[in-house]
Length: 140
Ligand code: HEM
Image (cartoon, rainbow, N blue to C red; front, side, top):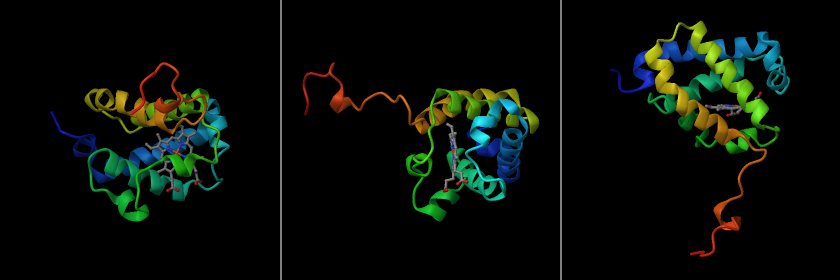
């Protein structure tokens, strides 16, 4: 079994996944809400996502080198991303994995981590930080 998704996909595969992801978003009516948040021309965002996923999947940290961070909060802050938008994003990723012919092993490897990263990008209806949590009675 390969250690990382990057080892399975290679650089070409990651690029193909990012391209397929935005192609799917562009094509599927079910992804219309999140498609509308993006520019008409998807070429630069395809490259950015490929760069991000390269590092995230265990390859060289090219997005970090480009931007100085891997934090996704700021670039998404201008957009309303709730459960509906998160689920549209995940649906596009699932369809993109299908489209590039990803193996069952790779799909299983990515399922939970993809959910977690997409849910982290969600900025609507987010649980309050621990410091504001009324269930926590002792604060350090
Ligand atoms: C949860 C639903 C998500 C929505 C609705 C969403 C939407 C967007 C939008 C509208 C942009 C700006 C596009 C532009 O600049 O033209 C963007 C940028 C970006 N998104 Fe997402 N996104 C989501 C989740 C994610 C996830 C999970 C990742 C990574 C695994 C990701 C990676 C990126 C990257 C790398 C950029 C470019 C940031 C930059 O300018 O450097 N997004 N996203």
